[in-house]
Amino acid sequence: MEIDRRAFIASLGGVAAVNLMSDEAKADALEDFMTRQLNQSVAQTQTQTPAAAAPTFPTVADLETQIETRIRRRAVGNLFVAQTGNVKRLPAMSSAPTLIDFFRLRFNGTSNHCLQSANRAVKTGMAEEVVLACLLHDVVQEIIKTDHGWWGAQLFEPYIPEKATFAIRYHQALRFYADPANGYEYPDLYHRVFGKDYTPEPYIESTYQMVRKHKWYGEARLVTVNDLYAFDPNAQVSLDAFIDIIGRNFKQPKEGLGYDNSAVAHMWRTIERPDAPL
Ligand SMILES: [Fe+2]
Ligand SMILES: [Fe+2]
Image 1 (spheres, protein in one colour):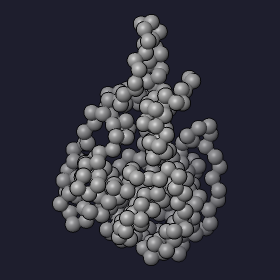
Image 2 (tube, helix red, strand yellow):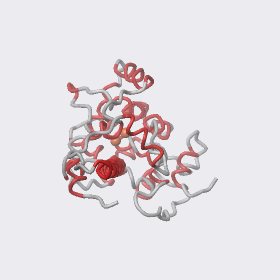
Image 3 (tube, helix red, strand yellow):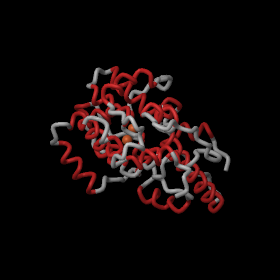
Image 4 (cartoon, protein in one colour):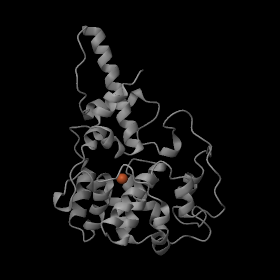
């Protein structure tokens, strides 16, 4: 199908808005756009009347209908599926890989978003645990997207302060609840990704209620504040600026991530070796 690039970008709110989106969100938006275009051209052929003009946000039911139009599920991790064409061979990692190695060699689909988020936390003078949480908050999406807050917190639990894992775990639930006093509005993008009539599942709602009263609510909320907003589309954030923060806060195992016999070692090995068949 031919894509009208200008119409697609316009449907997302223009170039600046597109630049703020993660690759994952762009891919989902493109998929939605193509589905709508296809539906419109079918409707046009059937009725011989011009297609409706402006695309609208999908409903939850629309997104459900799209499930069986895909060869993959929406929550598949970035490492396991190519955005275009075939997946590429991954560079080998050292025998004792560090967090920095993972950032450079495996977190390719998530690192730019996370670095920009952490950069914003630094620029606005946030605490080091918040900067660290922002830096790590979405990287687990390289293997899995469903419940990525919980998966992400688990991945880092043995290695970082509890306050940072708390913020990573619960940013997932908090992003569905506006908190204008702390600078967080419900993002328009979620109308597209989750459906315009989406309401969070009961476990998300009860998690939100619990976290809202927790002493570390602020830390988790700040991850959402740095998540989607105010990114400079031209910013090139280097990992170098965060090497010291990682050094101070990340307990790098000397055996290497994946080889320290921790309860999450297999998760790191999975990120390292996504082509291992079994
Ligand atoms: Fe996230
Ligand atoms: Fe994020």
